Amino acid sequence: MANVESMVRKAHFYIAPWYAEGVTKAPVMTREEKKAWYEKFEADFGSLQRNREKLSVETLQTKYAKSYNRLITDLKAGVDTLLDYHIQTFVVNGLPTHPLDRDGLERFVKRTNGIIREETAPGRLLEQAKAALIDGLDMEKCWELVYRIYERIEQEAFYPYWMRHCFRRNGRVYNDIIDKWWRPVQSDGSERWTNEDGTLYDVTHNGRHFHAFNFPPKEAAPWENAAIAEMPRCKGCGAPILWHKTAAGKLMPCDPDPVAYWERPGATGKVLTAWTQYSERGRLASCDFAGTPGTESGIGYVPHWATCPNWRDFKKN
Image 1 (tube, rainbow, N blue to C red):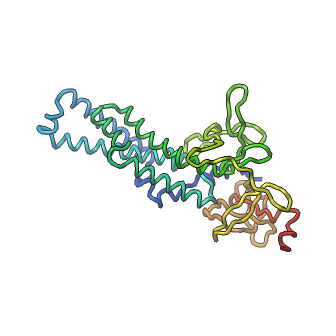
Image 2: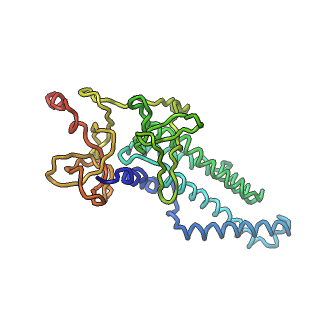
């Protein structure tokens, strides 16, 4: 059998709509580009510090106006890039999403866009960050203010989405984005997401660690009045199910745990695709559930009517 967990990581961290929706304007920077940008940003800030130590602002703005204004323009552009870097690193590449929850993702992206529009308006956090850097010569404060934009996104846009995917299942809290179970506070004070058997895990994605203790389930998010719902159950057999949307926009009851599959026309197995080599989602495919590791077609969810012992009752109705 395939390593389902590694495939879940691929599927559940895919967030292409960010760029289509305009959350971040800048293309993803390579490691070399990030290094070059940061070195220039630090060098420009060093030049500003030295100029201000030697000359008054009035002299810089008059006698050396052309070079000084160019330096200020470059620094402001650097802060804009810093915000894009935070959005790319902590939101686009850092926050996990479910590949079949298009409606939830759209609301998540819309809220994120709204927060960015608010905080890039005159007088808000981005302008304050530029003032801290240029007027206050405080690089640390600048970074802190830009990071606060990300914190707003996490709390006000991501957490409502995250809570949408937390369920009570068999007396415990389960999250279907990461396919993990919440372990409450232990004697050592720790609490975190774990595998079903209680063993710990960490996910590495794009070189970043998504630690198991990140994003605890919140019983109530004040802006949503959100509470952790019981996982839906099949009315025929009582087994836990989750409703996933097909590519055609229809809801389909599925078994909650993701599975690896090997697509084969005519096979008796059925799966609702969540991730494949071609990034197809929400397609009902015929498949086998065993095959050569490393050759699987993707991961998906088994329609519950394929496993429900009472499926005939529903077909009759």
